[in-house]
Length: 70
Length: 371
Figure 1 (tube, rainbow over the protein chains, first blue to last red):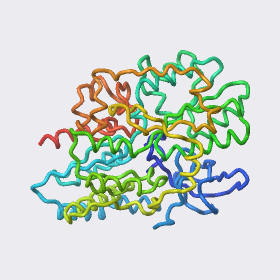
Figure 2 (spheres, rainbow over the protein chains, first blue to last red):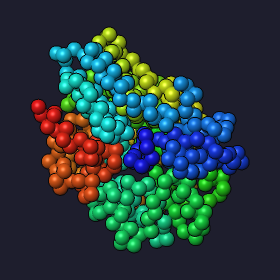
Figure 3 (cartoon, each protein chain N blue to C red):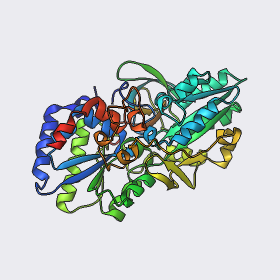
Figure 4 (tube, rainbow over the protein chains, first blue to last red):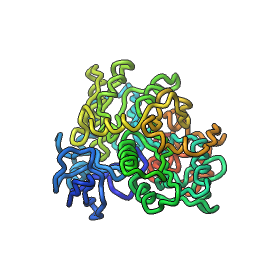
């Protein structure tokens, strides 16, 4: 899904973002969206997040690591 | 773009469309419900329904939280926004949802301090920056959004932020699906199951649909190839006499969900005995409130909330649209009195609402469906 044409409140809006930097103390990561936009993302729900991981992000929170199950 | 381009491949889409044609029984009319507003949006944006045989009908489900919020809760939100000293925060689309006396946008124009946020954490940041003000967050969404609200409330509690509270309207996906399946006026043959909700709760909670109601479910991604493949998987189940939950969206959805997300939700939320849904009425154990451990952050306890039930406008048929009983263009006010610019009903407000999807991408589909 693209960033711009979906409703953020929808249960199923999600954006795949790449981890650029991690602040493990605050459980936040700086992530990049496919269009290049950067955002601070809550990573408390994902174990062992690493730089370069692709995360599915919804409403500022990473819900799952993409590709793990592919 | 990884995980996007390959799922928008026209050749692959055409191959799947041919396979679907080979699987369907031409004498049978198939009625499949896509649960999520995200699916509805993609179907019309990419013209997925145009690739399906005429006897495979997609009907649109209740999986858009903006669309299912009843007018009374919008009135409650507006009342909270008018509380002295309150900064009221909400997601963008909620600003335009009509209550019985206007929208949150109208309330903002009348002087209420209402601010749009992109995540609950943004609302918490506003609370940190404004210690002398009360900041209320309008929490809405299915299980995809609820963990984000839960983590924010856990942070607020851990940091001792006392000027932050949550007006909780989170809902869960299974009870409305069961209500739909119990509805006598709806005959469905299968479900395109929710994708990102299942990231959190997993596919297992959907097993009641084949077990109790004998309908196949395929959890689906949101790209056009995802949806076509999911439709094919449902049709194959029907042809082979199988009936089970399958997971087309395995690159994102673990069958058991995300245990960390489920844990934080169970700590912060508790089930309400019942919750009102637009078009579906009151559904038992379908809404979430804050748990007793988090009651000091509950806006409904901190402030006086009217809590008055408000009937939908008579002209609005969002209820029938949300149940898949009518198509959006069959509503009396679709595209005339009710448009995305001036919506009467919630389904026209959210970009994922079925009416908005039809209006923006598929309003000419009406001619094809009437042929």
